[in-house]
View (cartoon, helix red, strand yellow):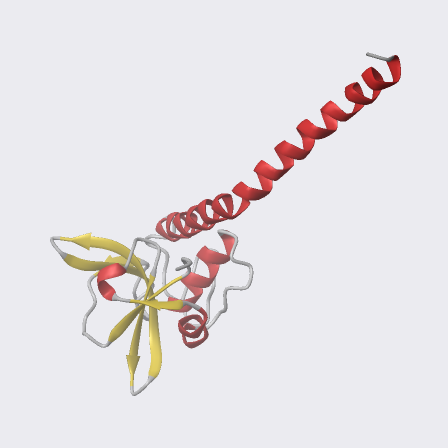
Length: 161
């Protein structure tokens, strides 16, 4: 084999390997993004859990006092959702609705009356088959777990379909 051919082969082989590795990375990127989003949602719930016992304060969004939507805003912004809105009504419009049976920890619960959202909470899971939420309840209250007090609520998620 002539020297020029060996030299071209020696130069092209590393480029070929890099091209193959790059194509594998690009093909895996959407899956990696989905994992990152799921981790962000999990982190949002973890951050909110760290606020347990913090007092309610109207209009507050942390770091140590919260209203209902302020708790979600603080937690999910810190988890990396930089465009997550501040008010409960805007949050309800921002998320994708999800059936109650499809709620997962880290999703949201929005209470409504007459078409208006008046309270936001984080779906924390189910206990004894019943929904459990994490929220900042009202004046005099503290960030805590509770069950929905009425049936006028819907679920929302930041998960992709």
